Length: 261
Image (cartoon, rainbow, N blue to C red):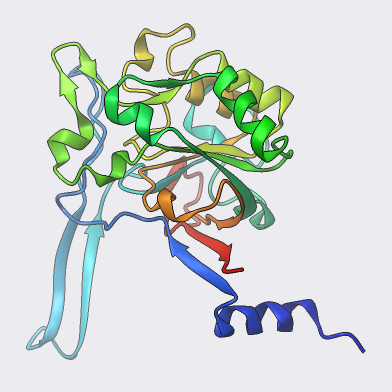
């Protein structure tokens, strides 16, 4: 009898044929949080409060309370996060079918362009050029925009906010409907604090990645890192958020499985 496919997979993991790449930034009080204008509500920064650490509060155990906004650090965006996705069934972190948290990924490397232009926008033409080299993006895939933005360790440089707003690379507004409708991807991922470009509030529509992706019942991943360790095609992402009832998203440990061959 042929060996069970899960047994083969387990052997590939233990034998190093399949490598696990952690795409998650550390979650700590210094983790940058998206900044909104004063008239809007604010997301809490990450906070950790020690309950006990092998002391009189608990002699044999160490644990903490923590608090943060749902969209803090490396995080998952559910469709209900945006008004355009609010009416879909199973659109929150507790109701999205679990099988959707495992999907292939396409990685589009524009790190050179982004290093020279913090407002760089990935266009449909860039993606079609990528497809001519690597093949058509398959339905149900993540599209990840590699900018190496996560290598900006200083929170101020990472957020990159000027008097006219943030300056962070992202998708062109005309690219988003192409990916959501014509390529039927499962979601979009970026290395910035959010999935949209820093100046996306000026676009038509504003914040197109949020508006159109979630309006198409798609997902988002933000504040990714280590995308330089992934191939253009062939990685498999594991992206489960916390199962928060009616959650709009959550911090998550995003992992990529990559063949070592």
